[in-house]
Length: 368
Image 1: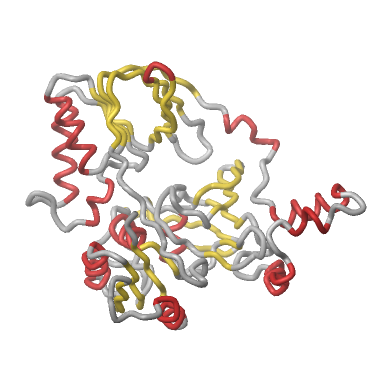
Image 2: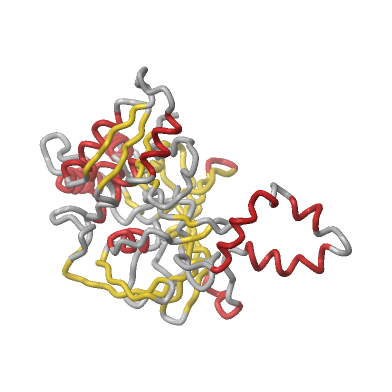
């Protein structure tokens, strides 16, 4: 058992062990893991390189807001480019490779470019390589900065099947607010569709110890049963991506890796957005390095996948909500040093965090 896995935590099925490879190295995870959670559970910190200077990058969020962990993934002889590791569920035999590093993200030969960064100002190539002809240099620059390749053998993988549907009320987001809104609308007699982009409803509820006197799992199951008994419909692994003319909402439903997604054209009378909020990293020097994660992301990895992202951390926040989130991680065994940006005695926040970076991971929490 990995030291990063916490017993009795997570929504994963520990009875089903899955093997996969990342940059040629073999690892194991569990059914219900994402590629990102499985790599963190195995102690893999460097998962990518930056676009220009090839600085090391680590996982810093837990779902669609992750900017770094982007892989080319191969499974069942199908390869898909630029798969987000935090939303790609692990399957047996997956082969993942970082898209902007060679031969691996951990040992990237192109990392030498970072030493020359003082000479490489923003947009320098547009001026430097105009003579004698930009097209002489273009192939090399695009190879250095490319983010994955589309295999011409798998164009058919991008074809979706389509469905047309309608409802009285469409609720986007299956957290506490979305579930409550959907149940209220269904009880009022509406034809309601509730969509969420995870495999199961719940949103951030799994980070709570209890909900109205029940475990999050039991509360969610009870609410869903009551909702469906009232005629409501649930679409999981479904992302709402746009509202179009005459209240038509575009939905894409993921059918699993390498399988054709389903495109829903949903006509509705009312739209309720209950999509929650995302955690934004605070700004400080070197906040792009591996080991800097969002605080809510760290809590999500613990709640959904039973992964403790580190053993020692500085928790940096500018609001009191960071205290509760940090307490959950501390209860799971993480040693935490708190840094509150509102502290009047904190004179130089930048240097404090810089010193902390030498010793700890940094978990950041910020409200906007």
